[in-house]
Length: 415
Image 1 (tube, rainbow, N blue to C red):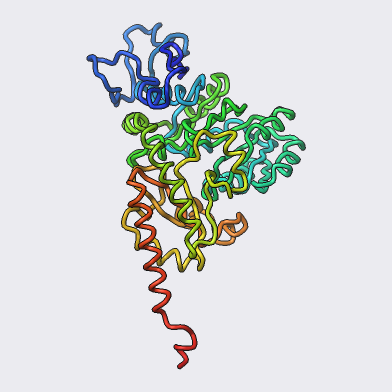
Image 2: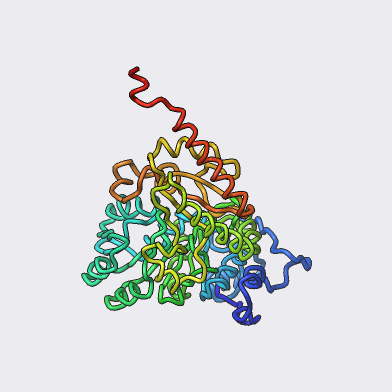
C-alpha cells in the first residue's frame, strides 16, 4: 500500500498522533470509527471487465486475501506513516518477512554481507538455507565496521543489518555502512524491530528496505503474530509479488490486533525505555552481574553512534550473570513481575536466556561462536512501574546471594 499520510499532514505531527491516525483517516463502512476485520477470502464482481482491471492492478479493489485485504492494507498504511515509507507489505510472521525479503533479492550466485549478531532465526537463514540456494554468505564481526566495509567492497547484492542486535544490543553505524554498500550497488535491508520507528528511521539514513517483526513492539500485547516490510514502491512491489506466490500473507484478525496495538506504541515505548535505562543503570551496580548491554549507557562501545542515529535507546536490556546458566536458573524463577518466555515487546516484562529465546535454534557451540554467553539474560522491559521492576530484581538477586551463602562449600562437604 502506498503511503497517503502526507495528504492529511501527518508528517508534521508527533509520534503519538501518527501512531493513532496513520493509515486510518478514511471512511469505514457503516461509519465505524475502528478499522473493520474483513474476514473474506475472496471479493466478488458482476462486471467481468472491472474484475479483470482490479486483477491487473489497473483499478483499485480486492480479488483474493492472499494478495490483498482491506484490514491488512490499513496496517501496511499505518507502518508507512510511521516509517515515512512509500509502500509496505505484511506477512504472517516476522521470520516470514525477513526470509521473504532475502529470497526476493537473492538467488544462485548472489552474495550477501551481514553480521554475526543477528537474531537466531535470521542467522539460520544465513547459515543453513541461503547456501542451499547457491548464495554466498559472509558474516562479519558486528563491532568491526572496517571488516564489514572490506567485505562489502568485494562486491555483494545485499547488505543486511540489524541494529540494535538481538540479544547483545550491539549498534552498527547505518550511514557509514550504507555509503559502503552504495559504492558497489548493493541493496541495504535493516531490521528495525528493537528500535521501532519511533526511535530510529533507517530509510532516512539511506537504507532501502526496513523489516519488522510486528509480533513484538508494534503489536505490543503478545497476542498476534506478524511481519512487515517497507520501502520504495518499486522494491516493495517485488516483495509483494513474492508473498502473493509463496503465500505467507497476514490474516485480517492478526492485522486488526496489530493495528490496535500500534495506536499505543508511543505511550508504551515512552514508559518502557525510561524503565530500561533505569534498570540498566541499576544492573551496573549489581555484583552478580558481569556486564550490561544497553545502548543508552555511556559505557556502551557504540554509545555515540546510538546517540547520532537513534531518538531513544529502546526497551531491551541484556546482561551477563556471574556463574553462567546455573545462576540464570536460580535467578529467573524468583522474579515476580516478568514472564519467562520466548517473546519480547509486550506490555509485560519478559525475561529469558538466549538459549531459549533469541537463539533457541542454535546449538551451544553455535552460540559460543556467535559470542553469546550462557549466562546472558535478555529483558524486554514492560510498562510496569519502574520502581517495582527494580525492586523485583533486587529481591531476586538477594535470594541468589542467600542461596549461595547457605550452600556448603567443597571443604564442608568433605568434612
